[in-house]
Each structure stands twice: as structure tokens, then as C-alpha cells.
Image (cartoon, rainbow, N blue to C red; front, side):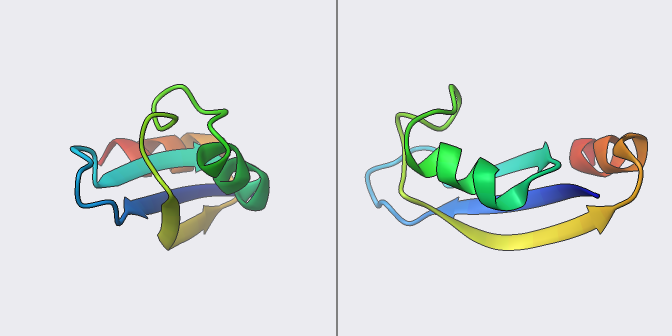
Length: 67
């Protein structure tokens, strides 16, 4: 299963409020975002999962992520 997800950053000082991503392990990926292991989100946070969708095909998930 592949997941397209939306994270929200509640930090008022942050310029980056939302992040959209794609993964096959949602729990692990959120942990990586919140522990500074993700290049694009490491300077911001903490991140909260606000939405996700599940797909059987990585191709379908990638199309959705780009929208």
C-alpha cells in the first residue's frame, strides 16, 4: 500500500505550514519528519498528520501527490 499524506506545522514562526508526501510506511515517515531525518522538513516542525489517502499502485499515488 502507498500513501499520499499531508502534514501541518503549527509553529507560528515557520514559513512552511503544509507538506505533501508519498510513502509506503506512513508511521515511519511521520517519525522521520518529526525527528529531523527528512531533508525538506528538518528545519521546521513539529509536524502533525492531517490527511492521508491509500493507493495500491505507486504510480496512482504519485499522480495524486503531484495534484
